[in-house]
Length: 291
Image 1 (tube, rainbow, N blue to C red):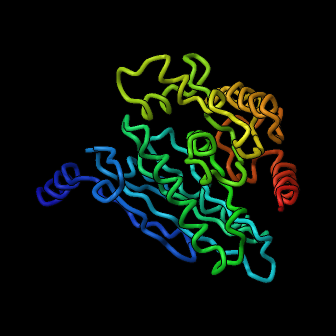
Image 2: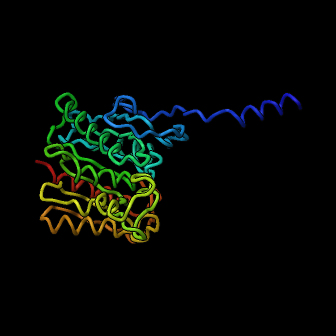
Image 3: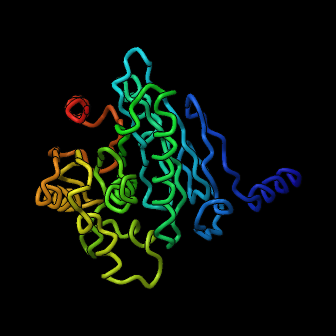
């Protein structure tokens, strides 16, 4: 009994260790961490992983899923999983979607991006660099360098829209797919944790307005497909409708799909009642983006 008690005590005080998880990728590219990236998140929380959900990510990595060259459409996508800018849900909002898209001819890179910890430039740096990496391998991986888009879920949807509106001129994604995305930062109309983690303590309403991508849309913002559920109480649908309206006002092509129910975070779930509908709609929309 005494020995068993000692083991329990040791387990209680041992630090959490990041668990390895098999994402079944074709290739893993290490982008950078806080010591080698242009800016550091200065995050002192421990990075952990449980069942493919990475908490407090401090390094950027790109997990590649290649389309068969025989069926490749010529398009590629950087996927940004969600997690409120405190976690990265690498499976159901990352690897699962990437494998499905690759099966349909679209090469994908699932981005494990760094958590901002109030350093708002950090996830943007990771997303822009991921797009650069994908473009640099276009010929090798059977797609066109000018047909690399970005896709994001929830807070990852914010990162996708953020990249679409803040990326340096000439480095914008070719298109964006925004799945139940956090976009507007207005107090009371958003997922508060996402903006608190992005902007840090002491941020203002003006900060939130600046980092609400609907306020940054210009004529060079890429076309967007937006998908969400009307009954989403985690991320109010107004995020997507505001971004859609801003795109249309700027003359940018956009398509908005609001499903009657499904709540938030359905990802690739077979239990989502409109799974077949959204998958067909996405593939149809992607075909229309072909150059």
